[in-house]
Each structure stands twice: as C-alpha cells, then as structure tokens.
Image 1 (cartoon, one colour):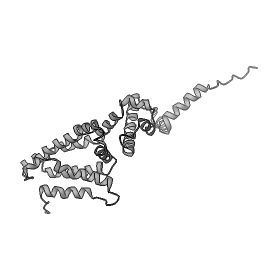
Image 2 (tube, helix red, strand yellow; image 1 turned 120 degrees about the vertical axis):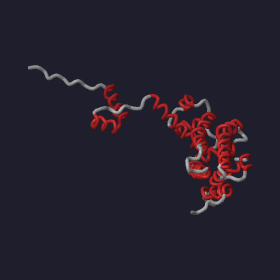
Image 3 (cartoon, one colour; image 1 turned 60 degrees about the vertical axis):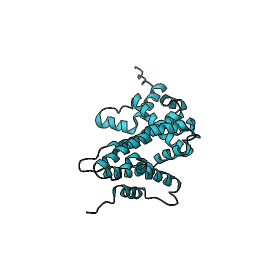
Image 4 (spheres, helix red, strand yellow; image 1 turned 180 degrees about the vertical axis):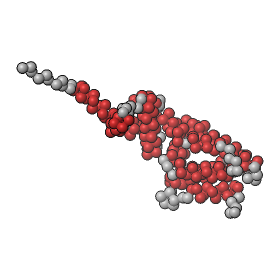
Length: 242
C-alpha cells in the first residue's frame, strides 16, 4: 500500500512574501483582481518619490507655521512626514531649500493668475476682484498666510529668505499688478495715471488682511473680501447697479 504523498509545506519566506503582497495590494487590489482580472500594481519608484516629497513639503508647512523658521528642525519635519531624516536630503539640500519650495508651490502660482489679460467683455476690475477673492480664500484664511507672516517676522534675521521671497513673489506680483493698472488706464477704467508708479497701493489691503487675520482675527474677524472690494471702489469708482 503506497503511503499518501505529503502536501508541500509553505515556507516562512513564501508566507511572508504572500502577506507582504496582500498588504501592498490592500483590499482594493484584491477587489481589482476579482472584478477586472488584473492585479492593481503598487506605485512605481517615481510616484513613491513624488508622494514622499509632497509629504515633506506638507510637514514643512506645518512645522514652519507652528515654530517659525529659526526654531524648525528637519528632524521634526521628517517625523511629521513619516520619513527618515536622510530622505529629506534626497529632495532638499537644507531647511532653507525646503522653505523656498514651500513659497514656490504655495504662493507663486497665485501670482501667475495676475498676468492674465482681461477676457473679452471683461475688465481689469473683474480680474482684481477674482484675485482678491482667491487671495483671501487660498492665502489669508489658510496656513499659507502664515508663510507671509513668517517672512514679515523673520525676514530681517534671514535676509536670504527675504531676498528669495522678493524675487519669486513680490517682484513678480508688482510687475503683474503694474501691467494690469496700465491696461486699466488705457481702457479708461482707471483715471489716476500715477497709480502705475505705485502698484503697492493696490496690493496693500491684501497684506493688511493677512496680518490682521493672523494677529487679531480672533478678536475682531475681518471680512477681507468686502474690504478689498471697497478698496477697488476707491480706485475704479463705485459699481453702478443696473
């Protein structure tokens, strides 16, 4: 009588490998296999690197806004991002480079919106009103506003940060604003031609809104959008109700 053939035993390595594969695929991977007949592949190396970079930038924003530039440590950024400290250096050479990337990703795109010319049938004032609303929603009332406040508070102590901020944000913003003002003058929307020499006048209330919300918002909340529209009334004249 032949002895029953023993079933092959799974090795610990095979079991661990199987468990790891299930962990990577997760429930969605299993569902994907059942429903579509193919396994959902884990993110590739480039995608994982991009995810880690985004996590580091988000953690940097939290740390910088909570502690200020001087007191922020990359160890704390790494811990908050869930990565090793060495991983940060694969993306940024130092703390200042990380802060600069925050400025590029959080603030520079908004400034780019100012460069758009008025749409057909639109006006310079329409552009500035949309910019004001976006600025308040995306900057003044979010952690991005803390970046602006941090520059104001610590820029004198770290002139390289102030220089970078001026180059990437302030100079671009003023150039775009001057171009819009000149367009408004040419279209007859703005009568005071000297305004083009001082575009800071137009953007000043936006900075007031950022500083006010950060320092006094809990005592006296500011309707920043309404304030900015009143400011535009002073420049363009009050809107006529048709």
